[in-house]
Image (cartoon, rainbow, N blue to C red; front, side):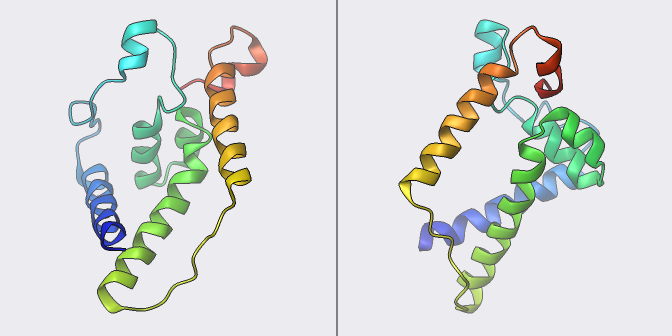
Amino acid sequence: MAGLCVLGPAALLWLGVLLVGPGSVSRLAPPCLFHLATGWHCAGCGGTRCAMALCRGDWSAALDYHPVAAFALPVALLWAVGETLAGLTGWRIPRWRLSWRWWTVGLVSLVLFGVLRNLPFGWTAWMGP
């Protein structure tokens, strides 16, 4: 539980950096080693730019940068805020209990997204950053 109390403030601090930082935080974020080595986009490429667009309230740009992260990041932010409040105040918050099947579906979906976004077909172009 103590580890979760640290993750919440760390996520909120990173959100603050994205929110008040310059137009591009690319110098703060390390480059994607997978993209540098292969020239392909990994499943996470575009996630930081998506988070910056969400901080500005630009949903259209966020969906262009990373369509999966545009929905996952607000959920992760709510989780971080909830864990932080629970750690600071001792409140009991509802916990999401996902079975291993849901984690497997999520992992397979993320890998499939990473593969599809690199295919040279027109119908997969929307997945690229």
